[in-house]
Image 1 (spheres, rainbow, N blue to C red):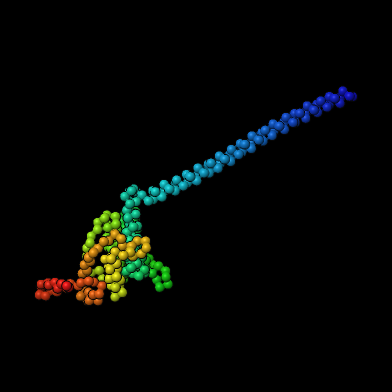
Image 2 (tube, one colour):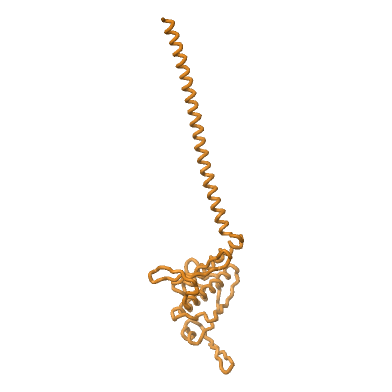
Amino acid sequence: YLNNLKQLEATATGELQVCRNNLEMAKESRIRAKQELDNMIQNIKGLDLDRELARSQSATMSNISDYFGARGIQTYVLQNTILALQLVTQSYLDELSDGSLRLQLRLDEGDRISRRASVLNPDGSWVERPLSSLSGGQWRRCSLSLSLGFSDLVARRGRLCSSLLVLDEPLTHLDSKGRDNVGKLLRKVIRNQSLNDNIGIGGLSVTTIIIILQDLVAEELSESFDRIDEVIKHQGHSTVVVDK
C-alpha cells in the first residue's frame, strides 16, 4: 500500500510539474502575444499617421490643381492679379459710393473676367446684381473705380507711373453727392493719401489731373479744381479760354 501511495505521489508530482511547465509556457506566450499586440497597435498608429499625411497631400495637390487649372501657372498668376485688382478697385469704390457698392471680379473656366456688383440695402443686407441692372450713377461709380484701380495696379506692379491723369466725362449720370465724392477722391489722388489702412492709393503718383466736363457740371464743382479752362465753340471754330 505504501508503494502505491509513493507511485501516486510521483505521478501527481510529475503531472504538477507538467502543469507548471505549461503555465510558464502560457505566461511566455502571453508576454509574446502582448508584445505582438503592442507592435500591431504601434503599426496601426503609424498607418493612421500615413493615411492622414496622404489625405493632406492629396488635398494639397487637389488645391494646387484647382488653383493652376488647365492652363497652369498662367491661370494662377492671372487669378492673383484679378484678386489684387478687385481689392484696389474696391478701395476707390468705397470712396465713391460711401461704402454702398461692392464689385466682385472672378475668373471663369475660360479665363474670362466676370464682373458682379452688390448693392447695400437699407436693412444692411447685400444683394448681388449684374452690372447691366445698375442705375447710371452706380454703373459710373463702378466704371470709374475699376479704371482707377487698374491704373493703380499697373503703377504698383508694372512700375508704369504717369504724372498725368486724363478723365473724359467721368461725372456722367452722377448726382450732386456723387460728383462731390469724385472731387474729394481726385484731391486724395493728387495728395497721394491712403484710402484706408490696408490698400490705399499708393501706386498712383499723379501731379496733374485733366477732366473734361460739361459747362453745368464744371460750374458746380469749381471749388474742387485749381483751374478751369473753357472751350468755346462758335461758328465752327473753337477757342480755349485759359484760367490764369
